[in-house]
Every structure is written in structure tokens, then in C-alpha cells.
Length: 534
Image 1: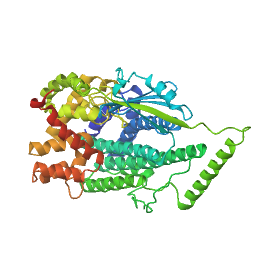
Image 2 (image 1 turned 90 degrees about the horizontal axis):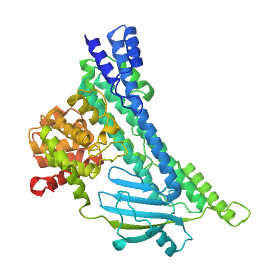
Image 3 (image 1 turned 180 degrees about the vertical axis):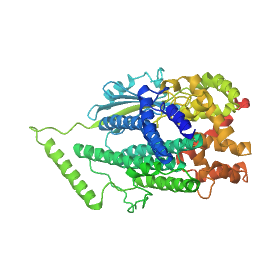
Image 4 (image 1 turned 90 degrees about the vertical axis):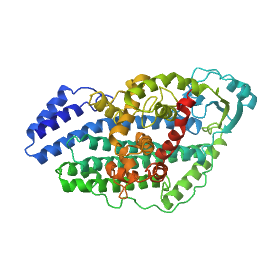
């Protein structure tokens, strides 16, 4: 009977990833593959290992898609850095458009309610010519026309500065933390679903995947640093002074098992009570280690002292060579220096209000259906997407309430729609579906995962944080052993006042992004209460 139930779970999980990572039905080939695999196993331990291996492979399909997405994004950013000195790209609350030749950039920041239009020109172009070229660009990405009467004009040189380089490396760190967070949420979802795989395997897998993200981030950051150094050398720009930091130690001194062996080793471990008791501690130590390790990536010197000296020497030689080439008319000339001329305007004060009013009826309807405060739904839409249904983050998450298809999307599909599969990206761009999904997920958090928290205000704070980082990471903020056991955490939470709960979340949540998220959403709820309704 246990094997039969696992087989049913496996069949439903096969819908997890196919094509671009989404499917709603098991394919014939996957059925045959699973049937053959289950027929070959000879004991419960083998069956557990085989099933764990199968689930791991299905999850890997989505993660391969994420890796491809990140690789494509990095390629796009690399091209923009080459031209502009930095890479501004769209995210959940910012819309960025480039002209076909990438010499005109239009940015609408929906959080700041501003629009900035920039033109990339040769540094030798006169200010008046550049200004006329710029002021011809009045069409904004959202279809509005810029009112230039109040525009602020400014210009800057493309100089591949240390500050620009840091912004690009910070982008990688921020994206990496967000993707690590999703592995935490995914692990908690699988554990709570009780799919028949040991918690130890699930947590260990998430840990290994987070370590892989950290390794990937190091390579991405090194590539950015090398790109900036190469561009500075090409243009004869001196290297900026770098702040020296103390040598960083390897945070993970000894992994429980090697990355390559861990999943297969833990897949072969049968699920027993002793193993389950140690799972939470192992996961919490792993979570602490990975967060400390990602924190060191940005402070690590990209090279050793000797390597750095060699790189500086090479950079100086390249700059000297560039200068020599510029003085020799018969050889290839140094690339022309560039400058960026821009104007910035404030958008109409009612822009956000108009977008909010458009989706308030949907929020009200879904809130009544799932017994959720509509002001909370609106505050989350405000913070997640600034009420933009086409919003897409770099996790990636999609739509008005920024749903990740394989975590919150899958949870709602399974528990509300009886579909054991992730959601499709196209679905999440549809406002009614997106708001229904986000509101349903808030209901799941409030009424299931966090139901043991008695005080409504305390539970609200925890729900907001869990919407961003998962219930397990909320539990870690209250459990002295940093375990992800939310029932244990609820005991502590129930002894605190709501304000104490808020302060402990702000102090102990594992990701700064979640702390900022809790602060923003909590403050914005008041904007959408009935007395302040738009």
C-alpha cells in the first residue's frame, strides 16, 4: 500500500516539469520509466532511494530552466555593460526599454513614480546636439508622453567606475539570495506535503543546491570584475582603488557529505525516527552556513595578492598599449569615449492610485472567498509589483502578487485546485488568476501553516514574512536551535506581544530582503483599509 501511494505521488509529481518547466499531465514515457524503475527494486530501502532519485531528477528539470534563464540574463547584462557601463533591466517594479540599437534607454520606476529617458552618444558630441537628440524622446514605455516642462536634465561619462561595478555584483548577490530563499520554500513545501521521502533528504538537497548557487555567484561576480577591468584597460581608464578586506575563511569547514555524493547517499537512507529527529538541526546548521557564505562572496577579493598584482600590471600594460595605439594613426584606434545624457520627470501623482483602483474589485472578491483582509492583498500587490500585471522578477516570479510557479503556485494548485503541478507563467500574467493564487496562498499560510499562532496581529506579521520567505524561515526566527518547526516556534510566539513578534522577525529573519518586505507591507496595509480606501 505504501509503494502504491508513493507511485501515485510519483505519477502526479511527473507533472512538475516539462518543456519550459510546466506541465499538467504525466507523459507516456514517464509512466513507462516509473513502472520499470519500481519493478526493479527489491526492498523498501531500494524503493525509497529510487523514488528520491526520481523526484530529484524531476526537480532538476525546473532548475535547469532557471540556470538557462540566469545565463541568458547575464548575457544581456554583459552586452549592456559593454555599451552603457552598467545594465539597467526590468524587474518587478521597474520597466526598462532599449531602442533596437540600444542607444536609447527608457526607465519607469513605479515605486518612485518617476521616468528617466537616456541617450548614449559619443563624448565628443556637443551638449546642445545631445540635448536635442534627447528631447526628441518623449514616448514612455507605459504609453504615456513625457511632459518635459518639469524635466531635470543631466549627463554622465561612461567610465566603468567602481561604483557601477559594485552595483552589478550586488545584483548577482541579491538574485542569488532570492533564489536560495526559494529552495528553502520548496523544501518546506515538500516536507509539509509528506510525499514519502525523508525530511533529511529534502533538506540536504536544498542545502546542496544553495551551495551550488553560491559557487555560481562567485563565478558570475568574477566575470563582471574581469569585464569591467577589460573595458577600463580598453579605454585607458585607471583601475579604481579597491578596499582591502581581511582574508575570508571557508565558511563550510566540512560538509556532511560531498556535493556529488550527498543526494545519492541520503536517498539510500530509510526514513526512521532517529533520522527525523536530527533533520531539523542539520537543516538549520546548513541554512546558517549558506547565509554566512553568501555574505562573504561580495567581500572576497577576486584574486590572491599575487594574482591581483599580476592583474593590475596587465591592466596597466593594456592601458599603456591603448594609449600607444591612439598615437599611431596606422593602427586600430582606441574606442570612442561615450557619455549618457538623460532627463528625469515625476509621473502624475495619481498613476499608482489609478492602477490600484483597477485591481481593487478583484482583491475584494478573492479576499471574501478566502477570508483574507483585502487591505493585506492590496498592500502585497503594491509592494510586489506596484499593481503591474506584467511584472516579472529575477527569481523569476510573475504577475501582480509575484507568484513563483513551483512554490506558492504549486501549493495553491494542489490544495485549492486539486492539481498536483506547478502553475504556468502565462496563467500568472492573468490578473484574476494571479490574485486568486496569491490570496489563496495567504489563506493557506494563515489557516494551515501558521494556525497555531493565537494572536491575529502576531499571525499577520508572520504571514507577511512567510509569503516572502516561507513558514520554515519564520520559525527559524523564534526557535533557539534555528529549527524550521513552526509548531515549536508558535509556542514562543504565543508568549510574546505582537510588537515583540515584529521586532524578533526584523532581527532574526535569515534574509534582509524579507525584513524590508515585512516593513513595507505592514506599513502599506493602512493605505487600503476602508477608511483610507481609494
